[in-house]
Image 1 (cartoon, rainbow, N blue to C red):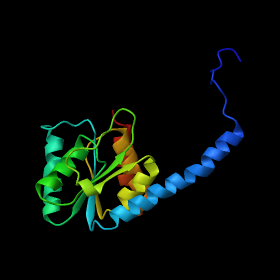
Image 2 (spheres, rainbow, N blue to C red):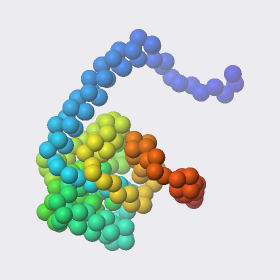
Image 3 (cartoon, rainbow, N blue to C red):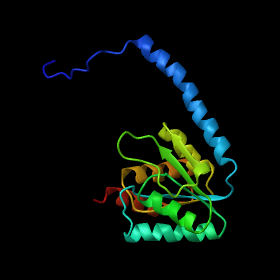
Image 4 (cartoon, rainbow, N blue to C red):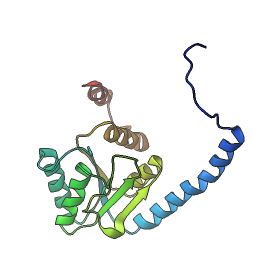
Length: 182
């Protein structure tokens, strides 16, 4: 075929099989480490939102205030551990003297842990799906702040995992409209 994509060196099937076989142990280790670390945090709320929201933005300030009030009521605050809304959530928990948990993902360029996470409550993940399980398993509530594709992905995963049968067709139509907006 003319114009075919050159994939470079082709991976041999046995090489792929061996990689996949050993990868299961790394995945399992992430689950075990996450369960052991988060099992002790108590009631918590996960806050999701854009990594690109800067301090001084109304949504950043709102996330700080929401997290602060929730921490004052005794809830731990779980965020994705990075900048933006995640930082704001951890900052609010820190200001209130509450538990500030960061579930960071290892990305090549974008994310770094924010300075408001409690040192003993900062976890790093290589696998998005393991991180998502930790958000859901250890949260009693979820707050979705404005964000991009990552925030939408997390929101849709929450809907999928909780399967809210109580949502009417009208509410699902609203969600479809929101997703379709520019």
